[in-house]
Image (tube, rainbow, N blue to C red; front, side, top):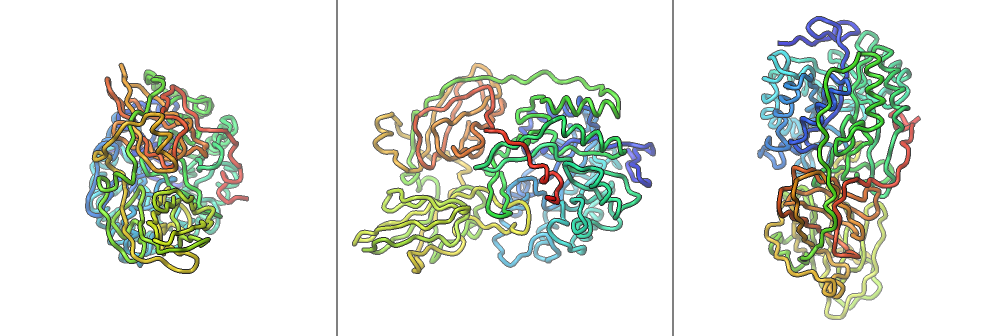
Length: 601
């Protein structure tokens, strides 16, 4: 058993003063085969603790059906960290933000339009209880009070940025205690009056999150907690990227100076992120401050360890500062992981989406278009089809509302795209006999932060031609969690030029690997879509950038023949991709320092 507690302004580990030097690493963003590598590199930098969120939507993807295997095996991750000599901080609050889809909340919560999120609505609390009844007992044997590595757990995440329902916070706290969680509990919020007022509990340790101006941030914290330990639970040493922006970076020496200030003030710290990893599949989230901003697939975050776990200049700068205050770390670095350029891969096969609908989905008939969640779908795409009468000339097609990007087809011909962040109607001419109208909508990630969390996907209200709503729809859910039923044909260059146009299609190619090593899938000439390697969904790509290549962890490959499948929405200039040994995250831009202060001042 280990004792970890607060006494005055200090943390005590087995009754001795202890400073937390922690790094954030989310097990669900790293393939399990690489957990050890990343944890050892963290320890070799001088960290004594690892922190992770717990993503509810990873563990309960469908209501009542739980997943704790593979990349979702959180107990194995915690056990491994303990074996390597690291303490663990777990943040299992129902909501995690984290630039993760819906802030970690499961999409099926949105099926009930009346349920209120992140408050003491009994409907919401009942769902949390059912989840915690399964999740929290898994952590009890891993608590330091039971001989495990977990020293602290979070009650809720940055709740003061969202609400002020203290009954909700108390309910979560009491629920954790009632289920056997007897380690130190804490909250984390930005260092502002409203956030510290709304997100904290008087009898629970409070911590603050920021990336700069540490003296000012801790001073605000001290106004509310004059005697508690100073702890920056999220030290933002980098930042994340949205599509259609530049790749954010932060100077390592600048971040190291802030770290030096914090440690010099006697504070504890958790690097957010120490290793970012990847938003595999459809799990990248989105922001909506002034407009909808979807997050890219990479969660490199310009962190001390890159997306594939390489040491960076920031890593070295942080190691130097930590050594100055805590002494040289004794842990050696693990051997480097292999990375390889496999070269060009021809995409020799093709399957058109519209020809494959019956193999991917069974349609449901509805009077009006309904969002994914009403049909029991969480992620991917959804296709709405109807017959439009004619003749009509020069009418405007309106989608009310599109979530998030719609491709419109009339009798199989591409008309245009309607995008949530730049909504514009499309002009339509319908022949006298009428026409089939198809609208393919892509879910690009639910909002993960702020007041607009309730983010249904697909078409939320209806489709109009001018002011006339169109009724009677066949709806095809396309979660694309399995592509096993697809039937591919040849994709020769001549045939492709004749038939491609702006038609969504699946493209497949194969390559041989003598060894399985990390690589990066470069998609030069391709427009927008989703990439799969050996059936694993790597995530989204888009020519608008900034990200130009997708990370392929070596454990996803096998010696011998490997398969690549792209679901391309628009078309491609060439029928090949490249597997390179270096990433391309796009044109770099320095992080706006006002963001790092949380207040935006």
